[in-house]
Amino acid sequence: WTRAFFPPLPSLRLPARVRGGRVPSTMSTHGCSPSLLLLLSCGIRLAQACTTLAVGRRASADGSVLLSHSGDFVGNADARLCYIPAADHAPGSRRPIYWDKEDHPFFVGPGRGNCYLPKPGEHPYEPIGWIPQVNHTFAYYEAVYGVMNEHGLGMGETTCSGVFATTAIGHGGKALLSIETLTRLGMERSKTAREAVKLMGSLAESYGFYGAGSFEGGAESLMVGDPQEVFVFHVLPDPSGTSAIWAAQRVPDDHVAVVANMFVIREIDFADSMTFLFSDNVRTVAEAKGWWHLGEPLDFTAVYSDGEYAQKFYSGRRMWGAYRRFGLTGLPDNYTDLRHDAVYPVTAKPPATLKVQDIFGVHRDYYEGTKYDLTKGLAAGPWGDPDRFMMSNDNKVSGGWERSIGIYRTMTTHVVQARSVGQGSVLWFGPHATAGTCFIPLTARSSA
Image (cartoon, rainbow, N blue to C red; front, side, top):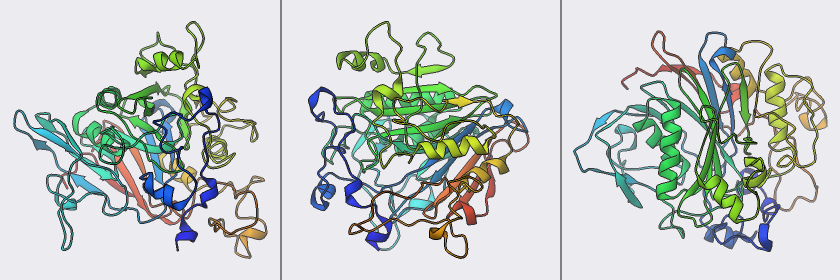
């Protein structure tokens, strides 16, 4: 079972580029030796690899902002969709922060609705830290990550590689906040996407950020949207392991965006506060390390990404495939180094407006009708099966399967249709593999 569902250990690697001739001390994820003993000692959590999409309101058929996430987990993932009710808090209250391990049950304890109350044999988790609580927190839906709150704010997550990585307080590091916790705090405290981006960035800087801690890397990306606008948000630990570096780029209203386990934000216009939001240390860290000089353009991906973490085309093929499904043709399907070769746009204008069902279709894509069609060829068998399972560690064949957008190990997929009409924003939630799921609609104004 383990060999069937977990990637072979040789896929763990040191960073593609170790600047300064050594691995920074905070890069505990990439610094692990590819052996099982050290893999476990590095505190590696459940592995996943997700795809996220975003559609600006003028690029959608009904004027909604659309964003999505497929949770392509492996292992004992927590597949529950939970409703967290709104709450009032006494002045001076503190908000507990827990270590996020992602597998089931990822949280046990009171104060977050009935979903997580201890069951027979379970015991409440202990917090690893606290932050000041606010007077009122909003209601929201959660599926490991916060996905949509009562005001129609939505998010979708994908893990990325980064040049820095660290671990949580109590687990060998000094950082308090994971991407899961940041999404929850954003849901609890924000009404708009812009407000949520600023809040999550500020909290990550103040309390420290730690990433997935798996072979995937120590950085993260979110699509963050509301009925008016949507952002691509990237975050990674700073070199000290006690703060964070982050940047966000607004998707133009008539554009779409794709993030698939790798940063995509390129040159930041530091004078354009409408389009770009960022931490001050985006420049200071890059300059101190000698990776960027004042007066030059700062390419966030080239500076802070560590490239495609699993294999070449692991991220790029999905970007190419998603843009193809959005109707954008002529994009190259080959490149040398996706980190340095900006072959795919950060955002792009589709030739036609898109519906929620079009987003479902992208997440169900196996590159049908292209030379990468996974329903064709010997490996597809007589029934055109597009699933390609992970190979065991003792496999002697080099190379890897194409990484499709649709994949058998998807735990859940969701699409947030952010709008201000009718019942407000709608969460379309689909359990299990996207190709075989049925999406159910849940409104932002629900109370359970």
